Image (cartoon, rainbow, N blue to C red; front, side, top):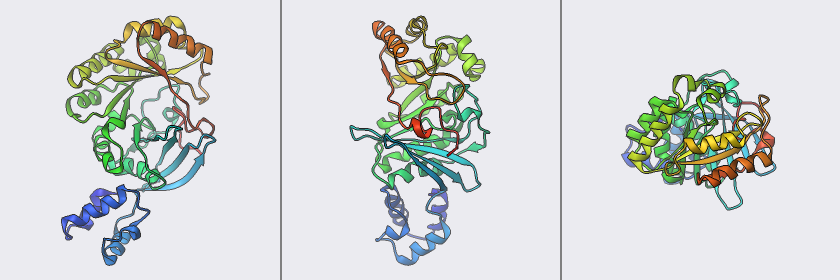
Length: 324
């Protein structure tokens, strides 16, 4: 829902009407007709003047593991994808996009091969979560879909700050970045809420990271990690490191040892991500991932292996490319 448009439409109404409409929306109401404490005439006017969502659902895909991927179109026709991940322990996590496409062209990411269109508004980001909230309650949101969140800092932060209305606490909200320093600095300086920070790293040195992630030429590892350490000093919250496992590229035990020397275990926790095929690389074997993690464990660098969800519908990490 376009909250700015909603405010304009309700400018002549009592202030509590805006709260009523938003509360119904945030709780997963299917449409204005469900808002029984809002006068029928006002509901009819809102139906005409304020579309219930800023996004149109073009396609939904359902995976064997019950993951759901939605392909949306914005009002001006740009593609956006978001994913609902259902876990056996009852968690319901939504992976949202902050841009249509991504301008940073990481070589292992399908989104990076798309044409970049534009930043998404805060309402367009929220509407991705609201789409799934209308199916069932959700309790986690990760800004790890299409786009670089720190390139759209203001809208990402506005959306993140509204998520508790939908049932997602700040501690269950994670914003990921490839290390875009201007946004990363603002995150440390401006975000008082306990929203989690994740760094997309994927290599233990500048040479390899520069080959995988062109952004590293602009913002090298030393500068990015220094900012992460400053964030930890400011907020006393760990930084989650995402490390996608690429066969024969970044998965050797020597590289694990190099990574352990690079990262302070008091500041960082590593999340090893099995590579999901996008055509550019092969994923590491389970044996290689286990050997890599064993080195991190020995060096007492906290590390986990991410559970892959939705791979069979191209909904897993790195696979979002606005295709059916």
